[in-house]
Length: 239
Length: 330
Image (cartoon, rainbow over all chains, first blue to last red; front, side):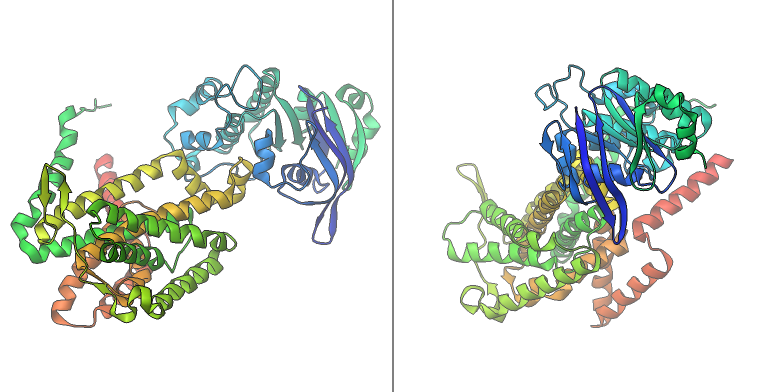
């Protein structure tokens, strides 16, 4: 088990946003966290990342306790994060945005993977970034910003990537591109914990799925099991 | 599509070459008075640029930058007064180190606050330094200041030894030291460290989850900014051969570079340099007719805030864009 979240509770002021949540992610898989809006999916990722402080519970990452650690410590431990809001530094160029994310670039870093993510390898999967590397982030489209955020997170050479709503607000063609990129990086060895509102994207990517009802996990199973169970799908996902 | 004609490579050295020639010939052509005005401009250009590292790049408005400028000025003056045989470059370096040390000491405090609280805390620290400087008579000679300390010659043993007292000679030293400072600061903004500074300004949380320790990074930014402000203060001390609390720790010493940054153009590297130039020129002309320099500075600031908030450099870029657009629509 790579990431284990046990009995997590998080509050925003008085509202109990995450209630007794437990989940786990295994090495090499794509786990998806699905549910309607306002169920606490994003807050779950923020709690893991240290951006929201859990009041109780435990977050274990490769055996290390990360509960309540500040975000930079979580990042240094090897967890990358792609947030859902406008994701990049608008006043930095494409290249500078990528450089900002660079960590563990040498062969002596904490990770033991053979293939380190470098700026050249990012340019290989996103050729347009090379051509527009001197352009400011604010001149990118929403889909380009999302891809740059993915590239920036990869530059940190994390072992686990938390991805929050990667296809939100993107055109269908771009949604497919982002999906393919996520699949490619997973096949290159990256473990992903994905929060998605687009069921078909999640269904085509995820090995395992957690469905979130109000502030807690309501269903856990493989993607195939969920596909075979339309009632549960309807209970948790249909609006 | 019209093929773009690439100018030959040597043309890119024309402008820097002209600039270098003007800088080299300046004191010979314009004489002592204007040479001194230029040195004053260069000192404040570096001082304002060091403040700009905080204001424009990291998004931290400091009202107490005189703390580092004055710290550097006093460190150089006191070192030259008390240490016999102190060399010129060690004395200047001492000033830079003092500015950096002051910044390092106050950074744990400054790291705890942001926005308005940050501005007010820096204001308080600057005033604290001013009062401490007046009260610690045994060290600083109070309001009398430190003056008449020996100005060492610029000497490379066995090769050359030049007196730094004549304005012309000091001019060359000042523009080299201050020029190097500006180049270093400019270079810093182009490094990944410069990107982190802009990242902290735009969204500190995002920098945090990319794995950077924000308090530690800010501490380094304060220290570097303090170092360059200290160098500026040190050159100021050598230039005037006198440092007083009112000259280097006064609240106006903190406000002047802020005005230079805003008048010159916030958010740009060239802004504070242009601001220092513009305000030095205005000071020079205005003080010929009136003692009320503050009135002119006030009017200038009001004009900038009301009509061109991007300052002098912003105005220049706007004009350039307008002209360029006309050309392309032809």
